Image (cartoon, rainbow, N blue to C red; front, side):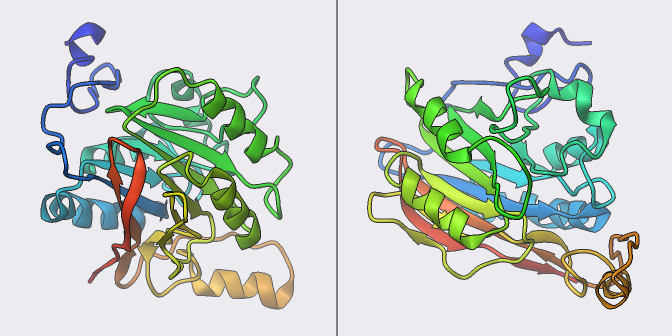
Length: 291
C-alpha cells in the first residue's frame, strides 16, 4: 500500500488511503498564452446523475482539453447528501473537487472524511466549529464553496466569509472559482458583482435548472446564475414527478425518490481563464444529453 507521502505525488486520488493530491506541478497544463479551461458541473442527482457524469466527462475532458473539473455532489447519494462511495465515483470519472450545499449533512457517512484533506467541501459560511472546510487548493486552482441565506437556511454571511478568505490570501493561485449554492437569483447576482475582478468565476447551483445568462462581468469574472444538474431529464429537478405532485397537490409530506427512468441530462459551464491575470476570457454552457 502506498504511503501518504507517495500519494501526495499522484495526479489522482489514491483510494487505498484516501490521500488526495495537492500538486503545484505545471506538467501537462496549458502552455503560456493558452487559457486554463475549468469545467463546473451542476448538482449531481443520485445514481442517474453519477451515471451521466461517468458517461460524459471522460470524453468531454479530451474533446475540450479541460484542465480542471468541479461538481456539486450534495445530491449524489440517493438525492440527498454525499457518501464516500459516491464521491469516489465522481473522482474516478475525472472530477477534481466536489462542492456541496445545504444537504451536505444528510449522510453521516461523509462526516469523518470531511475532517481530512479529501476534496469534498462544505460551504465556507457555516460556523467555524462545523466539521470540514469551505475551500480547497488543488492543482493551484482555489475552489470556494458558499451557501446562500435567502430561502435556504440560517448561516453566516457568504459575502463577509469570502471577503475574509480572499483578504487573507498571501499568494494568488492560477484561478479562483466559487460555487454559490443559493436559491435567489438576486443573491447570486449580487455576489457576482461583489466578487467581480476578485475571482475567476462565480457559478450558482441549487435550483437544478440551467440558466442562459453565462457572461463575463466588466472586471473579468465569469458568471452564471445556475449550472443546472446531472440527472434524469424527464423529472422534477431529478426526482420522480409523481412524488413532487403529491407534495404540491396534497400539501403533505411525501418522500422524494430519484427518477431513474429515461434519458439523462448533463449540465455544466466551461470557463476559460487567463492564468496570468486570473480573469475569465470565455464562458459557455456545455450541456449534453445521454440517451
